[in-house]
Every structure is written in C-alpha cells, then in structure tokens.
Amino acid sequence: HQAWPAEAGEKSYLGFTLYKENRDSVDALSRLARGLGVGQNLFMFAGTKDKRGITTQRVNAYKLHPDKLIKLMAKQPFGDSIVVGDLRYEEVPLRLGMHGGNRFMIVLRDCSCSEGELEQALSSLQAVGFVNYFGLQRFGASDDAATHKLGIALLKSDFHSVLEMILSVGRDGERSEEAAAR
Image 1: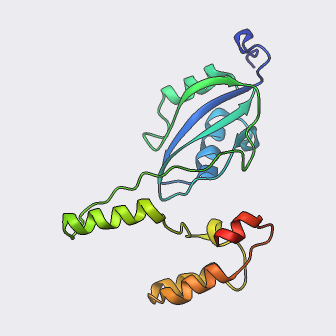
Image 2 (image 1 turned 180 degrees about the vertical axis):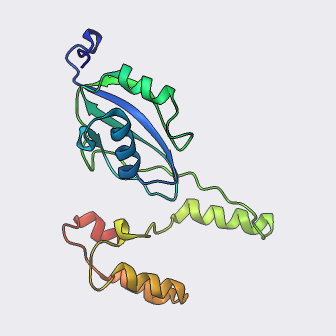
C-alpha cells in the first residue's frame, strides 16, 4: 500500500476524468475497480452516463494513489473503451446530483434534407430545445408512464400517447421547477 502523496496536502481525493464508450458509468467503474483491486464503492461521481453514448464525466476516489491508476491505465486493459485523464487532488467527494447539468454534442449523419430545412430545424432546436426523455432514468418508475408502455407506444409511432404519458405524470420527489417544465 502506497502512502498518500505529501503534495496532496489536505486534499483526500484523487479526481480524474473518465472517458467511456459502449458502457454505462457503473460498468466502467466496476471494471476499473477490478483492475485496481479496490472496491467499486471507492469511486464517487455526480451522475450516471448512458451506455449508448461516448461520454466523459468527473470521478473521484478517496486516497486512491495516482501511481496505481497510471500504472493500470498504461497497460491499456480496456483498449480505447475506458480511458482516464486530468488527474488532480480534490478536497470534496462527488455525490449524485452535484453536477450542474450535462452538455451534449449531437452528431448528424446521412441527413436527407435540404440545407434550408436543416437550418430551419437547427434554429428551432436552438430557440425552443427538445424534451430529453428516453429510458428509465428519464421516465422514472411511474406505473402510468412505465418504460415498457412508453416503449410500446414508441414502436407503434403513437407519439401522442407517448407525450401524454410523459407530460401528464408527476414524479416522486419532483421539484416545483421540474413540474412547471413538464
């Protein structure tokens, strides 16, 4: 067991940026924990990231020695699917909900519309945004808007029912500004 580095000072956490592809946050951190020989609960983060995206997020770990992480990652045990970087000592552990929100970069490929139509759609997106509802994380656990019911309606292209289910159902613990947005 390596001693906690003196240059960390009073800071007790090693923070790093986790890059991952084709796996959710829990799976990526589980693999990282196994590779390091530590428990998965050593890692703290502000929110989970979807498996289907290429994502980055900040993670920290209580007194995880940076040399241990650097040594593991130098072997590239996960190929390019899990990479860490931007290591630095941090004072405060991350907790769920501590992030200020997510930023997304959406890549459009093989668009079959005119440049004018695309510009109009992008202007609308910029002006009014879009509802970001997909998956259990977004729908919650409501019986009235259960994920399987929403999925069936989506597969049937019954978008009226989908929107009705999503927008009509309150969520346990929903904040007033969330209810207003819904």
